[in-house]
Length: 315
Ligand code: SER
Image 1 (tube, rainbow, N blue to C red):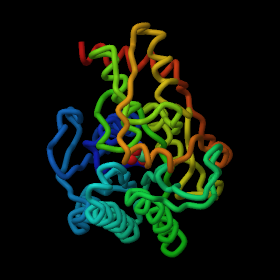
Image 2 (image 1 turned 180 degrees about the vertical axis):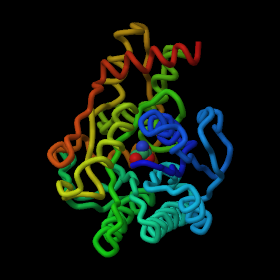
Image 3 (image 1 turned 90 degrees about the horizontal axis):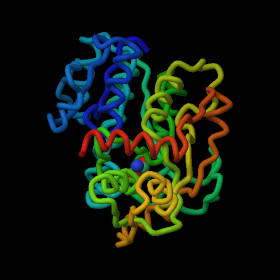
């Protein structure tokens, strides 16, 4: 990676990845893009261009003009929001990815695009979910993510596009809030702990899902994109994870810092059903073996860092 264009750069991952890549590859080599200016302040003085990923011509123009060699394609509608607008979710997620892959085919750019734990849904092992197993998602977001994995593999096999990706679990971070997914509770719980010392969870007790702290999620992009391609068997997309969490476990970690922290529940049936259709825990052996993946943050380390940063931000 030398010159990188990021789509969805104003979102939860993009707004931090842009700075991370700027540090690694130089500020002048990063073009952050988004379809509005909402949250633009998160990018600071990084170079920003307006881009709606449904506009393939504009994407092609930006890639050629800026001599981009890697597109990090993050723009997508997440799981819970997707259930309120399935048609638009298909259009945005699939149309955007196909435009990115077409531009990559035409220009020779490499592509990183994240998949998700949402590719799983029915008839798969919930515990230690393997890299390769049944993928029958029950959300439109999951349908687009599994289709995206297949499409990216197709562009690699057929046209030699260097497309790579990971199946992100829930990502916990303190700069930009996630955009209405199912795992968002694991972010909100920290914000509410700092603000009010209590949280009402829409996900039920004992509902386990995989989570990853943002610094690990960012490092994964660079490590996968810089990995020796000869070693990659599963390009799109690798299971990666750091921890398997449910609300009480996070609350217990928060109570080490805020002993009075109170957790209660008001279950959202839509997001609860989605959560139950996703893995309890992922097996990330392939990522470990093929490109040396490992997570650095566990629950106590993440909790300490989240609370410290949110205290600075919110108090
Ligand atoms: N965090 C995402 C969501 O909950 C999963 O990829 O939708």
